[in-house]
Amino acid sequence: MKNNNFTPASSFGKNTSVDANYYLEHGFADVRELISKEMVENLRDINNQTKSNSAFDSFKRNTYNVAIEDEKILSFIRTEKFADLVKKLGYEDCVFTDGIIFETDSNSVGFDWHIGVTSFKYIYPEDRAFSIWIALDDVDPEKQDGGMSLLSTQAFSGHEFYKLQSKVTKSLTEGKYKIPAIFKTVLGPRFRTEEQKKFKELYPFIQEKIPHLFSESLYISGFARNLFDSESVRYRLAPGDAIAFDKDVFHKSNRFLPGPQLSRRAFVMRFIDVKSRYNQVNSDKTGGDVSVLVNKMIAGNGNHFDIQKGTVIRTTSEVKK
Image (cartoon, rainbow, N blue to C red):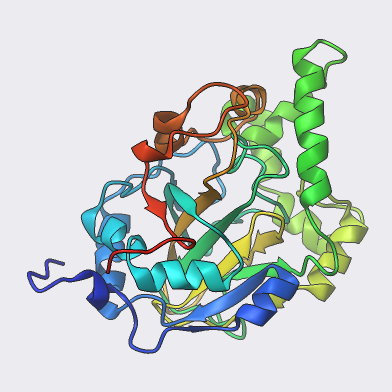
């Protein structure tokens, strides 16, 4: 939808609000009215015009590197108001690394409990990063849902998993051991046989019948999955509302149930601290999709990224309005 009167300020909702103290304690929080109705329509148009192109098959539509040069999005994240939000959440200067669409329907299973191991594979475990998940349709946990569940870092943090995954990747590269080929099937349909693809279709049924024994998550058992579910937080969201969450936060997709709403669309933005360093071994060997914006900023293994080639959100210095 074209709007010739668009300005960066008009992309924000009228009453944007977030409980920053809750975020600092738990690692996530809902952001009410983050974007305006006009910006919602802009992102819906982008979603509808984008073909699904992901290594994974868990969504109706899932594509990375979306609208990463869209002027409305870049203008939005360059504003002082957005920088103030990022600062409230406890981050210093950061750089935009990806735009992703996630559209789910009643035939989609989404992602089970996970952290951003593939999304942030190009940085080191100690480097800070976060995501902002923007709802483009209604999300109501009491009706069709289709949102997310999140686990407080006060209950269980994913930080140690980043350390383990980075260590394992390094060990594999050095030839210390090998992981059986069967485990590659978790990296997406291209690694599965036809028989394995058919078996994956049974996952929701198996999970419903024997939840204590089955988990599709790479990180936790069926029993731990039940504990994560019990301690998790879900949000009711209107179009334009968002969820901000740190990279250490475990989260999962909630099933989108059949009903009058045909699908649930969302747009996600990812950011890393400007002091992050390029982890080449981890980036090369970990599955998932490639970040075009990150690749533009690479300045050598172990080095800081060349942020002059990216879109930087300044929280520690003066920001142009």
